[in-house]
Length: 262
Image (cartoon, rainbow, N blue to C red; front, side, top):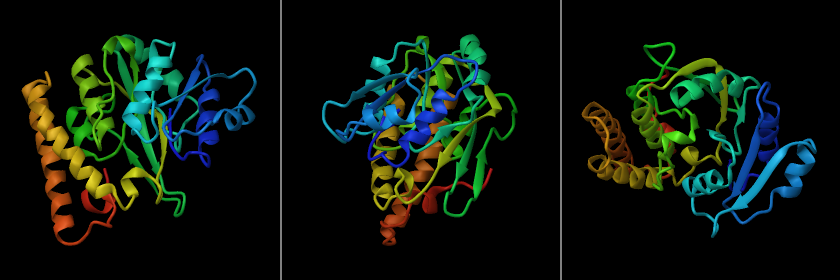
């Protein structure tokens, strides 16, 4: 769990981890803002909770750096991703663990929740019920936080935006199948303070998309995967640049590139 200015939400996220039923969990929190979340988390969690705290070498290195630092401190073979402003549904890890052990990776439905309006948007595969395809990963413009095994040998790429999508592309290529369980829900809360909704999101997105398009030729991905990544991020880059040219730098990423409701 990377944490940056997360004091208002991290207790809820951490409690959803220790509430997982039927699995043993260690929570590894990496502070990317120089903050000490220890006292807050120890008050919020039972004394028996397995909690490891770490931090990036310097503040504000970004979520990829924080996640990779946390990965280096984690002791388990199976890694589950959770941001400090989101939470797991109670059965998520129990439902996904057998598939991860069999295939190397799995995920569930992402429930995007707007706390202000109560609106919910659910991300799921568009065609197959039990697996993600590469087009789902790249074209839905929704996160699918993975649960994966260390044997996959993947790390978060240190890019400006959409690093979670590229991690999932790497997992898809490494495992050759990406199992999906609708009931293993991830609750993804949006708001004015989230990255994709911030006033700086378009500039960060443009930088990230250029990095992604530049790295396609360097990755050992099958050609069909390269084509989907190039198409999806090329389209998003054009949309962002059009919005910036029209004076829309203060518009959120969601307003500019969000795909139609799946």
